[in-house]
Length: 343
Image (tube, rainbow, N blue to C red; front, side, top):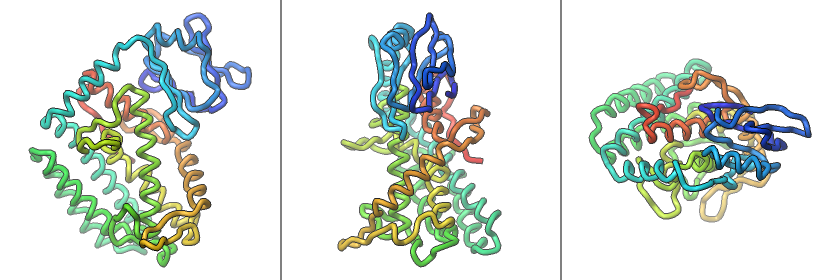
């Protein structure tokens, strides 16, 4: 159990929630583990299948406390709502800002600043930890290009210009990504980012991690009442969760790129875990996907200090905290959306 921003996260899958007086009580294997007065909460997010009592659901509805259920792997299942109250106002604000190019640009700058800063941190760590075996000069050249683009964001006056900056930075970053691959270089390399289909093992791996991350962020946005399909940076397109893709930008380097590199460098995956198809595309074997899913879930259990909250949380809760911060910004509770910056 973890309480953040007045949201209770119940992360043990076998937990069951019920009402006792005006309290939310969490039970695990018939033993009480946690209780909190309902008036201290604004949302409850449950990762598991045991569920909650009807009385607890009613208590949440009567006190306007959101109650969301996700699978243990973070897939959004359902949300218990009473009469329409806050969410409609939150979504109307989201839609209004999405239709306003100036306001959308201001929010989008935060996403891209977060992404570039976190990409720089990944590269900086590589120089610090492996500077004797990688081309540090080449990486520093790219880092300078990232800094120059970062400085240009302040004066950026259109979303198209910002998209150009983001595209350039992604190109620079991935141009030296291969330097960070220290082992199995015959099987894992990346000269450029490609997808649909990915044409090499590393790209296939990154695409799979990005898909997992997008699903987690989409679930997080659902739990706070935001519409994952209406974004500020990515344009609307049928079937595309644009806001999830927006918020994924700042989290890719920390949650996906570093884990992919670690799995390759620690030889948790090998070339045998990938298959090249007739069209040149590369897919993972069932064993490879299983290894990645296991590493993904394990990584989400690690603890970090959240840079904005200044509080320790599980890595897996980062998308939920960022979604809550976005909702709070749109409601006017905080002055701006704070991107996630990795340490």
